[in-house]
Length: 257
Length: 326
Image (tube, rainbow over all chains, first blue to last red; front, side, top):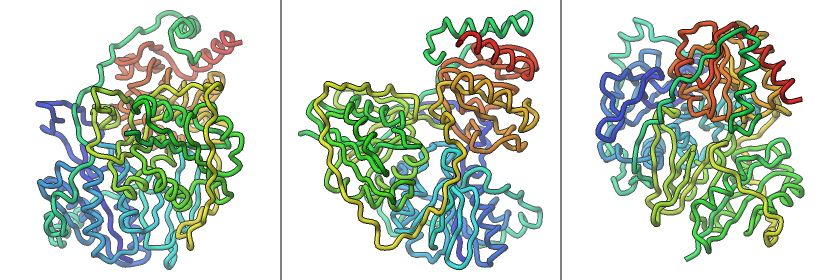
């Protein structure tokens, strides 16, 4: 079974965000594999262990993305592909999905796995757009995946309800929390990763020009949320505090109470 | 020249979702006077909902009513909506940023070769441009964006844009029923839906969220929180710590991984306030923190704090709210 995992490198979830000269500063930031994409990597490795085949991890991003792909190789992926090009960096989800589709259209695959969304831009578009562009079915936000022959049986988290689906492969799935527990790269894994195939490509290599992927949306401004001031710590006996809190809420301007 | 604004309505548990009314108002915020509003309503047994929608819509309601559309499936829903979109040639398509909206919107965007802005929380007009505000890093930062060209696809986050109000004296909407032609072969089939949320208030749409962290200690520990949520007609959420510890489903997780919620009142019980959790709830109107540890970071952004054991404080609050709301 040929599996491709699309992944993105993101800030660690514990990072605070600072804006410098109109852009988000990455000074001293710790980068990780987008947590939802990490579930996708784990699931791909698990399927390979069950059914054989190969796992290729694919990303678009600046050179530092190499580190995230190396981590996935150290976890057990077989090959990595990084499409890195300044002409893509001004793009949006439309652009990125076009580039991925152009590359994957020329590959042979049974499964494409990705994350439910990326924790940085949070658009949740790229994987689903990709499935449309490749004309394959998709199920987003899965928490269980079993493959038998050319059929996949999946559980999808739909806002707390669980939908069970049968899907004919090739297909694309996006991972939700609860799908699995990603493994840590082992020391031998890290050593082996250094010798695994790593392909670095440009926009030209996938047969696209900048004008074909120019963004459909444009950022006008970037800002931080207003900082919240700490409020009032209530005092006194706990039952009096509870009564006081209810009073305060009833006299506030919220309509919910 | 007049343009067509499309709203894809959403039905859950046989009810029109609140976010659809918010999407209708989004059209009002973005459109010019002579633009056309067309609502697309897909599902099964839609007569009552069509009637309800017609009180909001001075335009068209395209109804696609078929038993195959009773449950959301990306393939059947996309097959149903494709032809209507072709005929409407939309300028913008609005959907809710919900499980089905998040799924359908990128399919539509790819099909229309369109840009998409996801999870929009505010819409404003400046000169001739429509500006969309959306979060980055789950709300650690925000960006304002615009579209470079049309068509456009927008998903809006529930609970952030005011809902449209009914106007029964409006001219009746023009209801257009469209037949559903199932695709020749379905590649994905929904076998079953396990309803775990029926009758419960949806977490992302809840006006009040009662949320538990590691301090809840066990899945049973969520019971007092559920009781409080029930009295307040709210929903229960959780921190990553509580989910990782197996106290509750990941579906309840609030944070940078998990859901972002913006209720009127957020009650954090036994949650210390890790940065990744704060990203998911710090835009709530009023934040209340209940924690044994007076040094917990959550108190730094809470409007009201009670230092104490949640197993004592939460039942006390439940009793007080019962009295106050009786």
